[in-house]
Length: 449
Ligand code: 4AD
Ligand code: MG
Image (cartoon, rainbow, N blue to C red; front, top):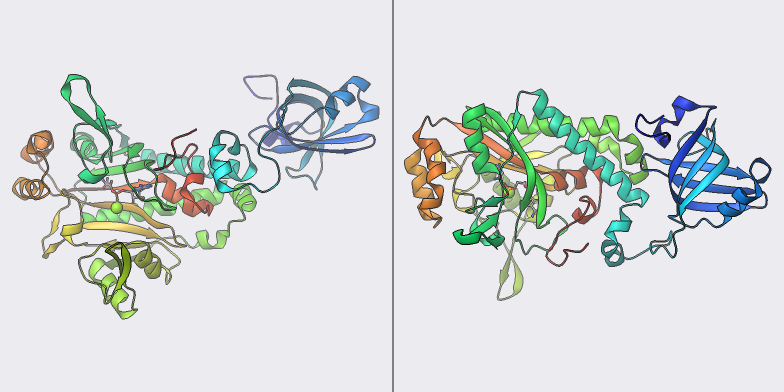
């Protein structure tokens, strides 16, 4: 019995075999013939077949059951019977029912619907078994992340959403009016605040929504997404990469342990996930470029509105989907690409002391076309070099005075990274599009519901 209410949840039926219980939920499907009616009841924890036999219930109850439609809400009373052929292993022999509401013309029927229709009805689409399973995987990913950090001495330090300046480049900022103080911007990353927090608590993580006014219309981009960002004092780039590998291995293995039911429903090939164990692959950006050149993978560039292939791939250009997917085809585990050209990376990244053309940055790419799941770096801890970078990036110096204070008062080597929750859930669940892995996706052309 639920500790809060006098009803039972479907995923706990094994504890009450043979007993009479009350279930509450929605009709996922209903069939019947003659003296029998079968109600597939969904309650959020699972689906259970409830069997109505005319001789076991009053005429009124049998007639009521006949009026039930898809997504009608109801309470069912009945006896729990073990049934190996049933989805959850148990069935209910119904003795009574109470209808909350009869649902009329539920728009999402068992037939196939187009993507546009489904996303417009996201508030209802969430009830379908596939979406339900993906949301459970998402919850497992988030729980794994929290357990990992909380269990390894990290402290959660929330960072603000309304911020006075850019963190990840000025071209993707959402601007909003802020009383008499001019403009505020929705946070692109909690990192700068995480750095301040790490100087107080040593090892911290922020976890919250982040915003990018990105015009990318792809299967991997949202304008609002969730990011977890650990930041560690006294960690260098190697420590940072080790931590990123540990975290991703932990998340995947946790999901394998707790989400088998969901993976079965999603028809996810879990043998691939089972291989996600440390050590992962690592490659410098320069070696990755060599590989692209050897394998004739071009840079795709828009010239006068036309996409052209540039060969050989020029050192200094950022990787896009084409390069990432080509590189990753050879691997079954994630691969960390490190030491990117400083020109294409953020202002706060530390130059490699062995080669000032590159920064101590690292991106983790996932297998199975997962794309970039992590972006991180060692941070510039030298105030003069940091000032130079802020100037070069044309960032307003006054806004960064507080951030520079971290380099004025006890500056230390430190590192961190950001992991995009939706990228990881998309990869692990095998979903085709990122809009399926967040309850209410925000994209360039969609803000409703
Ligand atoms: O690589 P990014 O931009 O890194 C940062 O924001 C750093 N400040 C993080 C840090 O060092 N603390 O973003 C980090 C991750 C990406 O690797 C990707 O997984 C995800 O966030 N991400 C997105 N996910 C969905 N939609 C978008 N538009 C995303 N942009 C980044
Ligand atoms: Mg990145």
